[in-house]
Length: 458
Image (cartoon, rainbow, N blue to C red; front, side, top):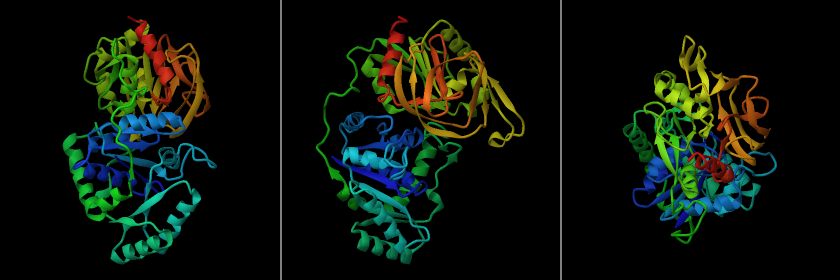
């Protein structure tokens, strides 16, 4: 099995489009397992669609080195190629003076060679200085090759390539011209999730345009020659292996509005002995289950439809009152408030738009609000269905949730903002709603406690 990591010199270098196209191209002849560095949902949705296998996240802020290696090994079973997409620039992370949360940290944990995507707009010889700086900044990182992006023409390409290969001693395996077709549809949090929009046809059309460009300007054979050879992963025991008996039913909200889940969530639940039951808050009635998970997504784009499914909203409110465990993250938290209010100017609206939500938590969600993107660290207490634990995760939202003053919170954050004054994890009976997104492997003990709460409902 071969493994390679694609990273950028900065955000906006083009690594996402390039990695996506490489996944699609390589998948035509190989079984490709994709990974995404960082706590992110949207890029992985595209990489999974391109490769036909669930993309898995790797982040050394939320995960230990052992957990990273376990996820990598589990994901690579049966794969020919492991293709990892970095996050932001190679060395960007949570801190200024160490590589926590960075692509570089993952490259070192997995001992994987790196291909650096360089935005070469308006630079030629300086591109070599940039690559050289990346090489010497951390000698433990193996920069095996370079892909130039935003190249103006043949002379630009030739000068930058010659300089990099002479001064840095690494091959330039691709030089991509400036082209509008390389742009993917964007939205306020980034790329539109794969599940949303006009469906597979629209995705295939975009992928065909991008892969046509990348296939022409990047040498796939040279890329594979730079990859690290590993022993094929066939079978090994991991914490993600499914339990023999699936004896607890956990409903998971999964539709156009709620789809921010790490692939590992479904494996963790299965490993604990849970059968996941997908349901749509937009279209369905609430299924019978021992507990429910409502993840993040874009519920603000579907306010009228969510309000219109009053049978679902009333059922969620009722099972919460009855003590059935519910765990909701970000968009799920928003859905559990009394109402969602979209202020004038949001997405071009001229008037305020509001819709009734589930009413589990007294209060309302308002958008837009200050953009919050941060790693999160804190402790939870035993009053919530996730149990008492120390945890790490992240938050990313443009909303604010204004809850009643008497609201009880189970999370106290030492890093991050949460719902209110570093408090997060609002609790009503066995329902918990938070802005904090947890990685299910890094916070396995908390999901185990949630599973136990669900089992106690039987």
